[in-house]
Amino acid sequence: MSDNPLTSAQTLPFQTVLIANRGEIAVRIERACRELGLKTVMICSEADRHAEYGKRSDQFLCIGPATAGKSYLNQDAIILAARLTGAGAVHPGYGFLSEKASFSDAVAKAGLAFIGPPASAIATMGDKISAKRAMIAAGVPCVPGPDTALPDDALAVERTATEIGYPVIVKAAGGGGGRGMRVVTEPGSLHEAIALTREEARQAFGSADLYMEKFLEHPRHIEIQVICDNHGNGVWLGHRDCSMQRRHQKVVEEAPAPGISPQFIEPVGRACVEACKQIGYRGVGTFEFLYEDGAFYFIEMNTRLQVEHPVTEMTSGIDIVREQIMVAQGTPLPMDQSQVACTGHSIECRINAEDPKTFMPSAGAVAEVVLPKGQGVRVDTHIHDGYRVSPYYDSLIAKLIVHAPTRSAAIATMREALADMRIEGIETNLPFLRELLQDEGFARGETDIHYLEKWIKHRGAA
Image (tube, helix red, strand yellow):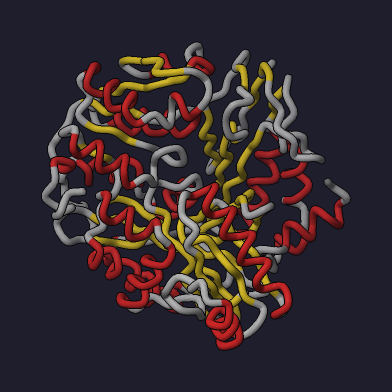
């Protein structure tokens, strides 16, 4: 990996960007590139080669079979595609290779710009133990628990759990996406949980390293969006609430987080920017926290663009994808913290191709799409009449985002937008979201990370 992340080949100017992703985020990146006067190359798998959105790009290149491991996760094929098409940069979007330090490093070694952080920063923040250590050094509040891997010694592990206090949560150091974690409520189930989590971590993440933290029982999931350039500048763009989750996957996100004043969260935001400077971070990233009883606890950093970035764009007025690309060009940030002003309230609903009762994926042809319109309504999507939803990838097919002066007005706008939106020919979670947005607990902002699971259970869904 490059020794100095801020002077690598990644900061060289470029005129063509290869978009190493698919679907709505590929369309979003292509639009930002076009607005900047940059050319684009979209890659695709055999399953996506007939997708209409590929026509938006200057070049559309199939690099492998439908299986992601042989296409969207094939690092060699992506870099070869960049060379063949004359692309000078690679944008990974989110998911797939976006948080792979090895990919960032390989792109830089190929003489291309990686539109994301340097490999060293991804490696530091990708390992939850080293990330926690870095955050403690920067003064970012963390969940109680040691910043070291759990030892093999059973008695030492028991002592650690006792010192933290039950319940505790055992997590994979290289984990993410809600995998590789188990809650332990009593000493008698500790060692079994560790054994099971170690094996899961070994198979899923290639590392059996675990760590242990205090399990917070009723927290909210709060995020802070940051962006940093190559010139020592960094800003944080307000905060989001992503507590509405099902099986650790976000369903509804909003900005700002209800009931948390800007003055109260400001020191945490400043600490996040300081942490970025200490680890040589460049580009956009998100610090994720659990928030309980008036306190913030760092859990992880996503070293990439996030699915829910639009709610921050709507409230801050800053095009995050555009700035991400400009930073990779070596351009200084055009604003400092005093110029960041978040206004109004924004809500995002993830529209998935899935049964609204069982949540089973629904593949097939889309017969008709009717998108909502109106002031403060935005839809990020790649689907259209006749689009075929593939069974090979994530079920996300659209993001519905609204912005209004107040939270109550944003909820009202979202309710109307959901009522107007139609996707025929496949099952979607639109009925589920329409029902959820009528929930009084959500309207009052009384949610935590367990709220949606309980709501679904009460609703009688599988």
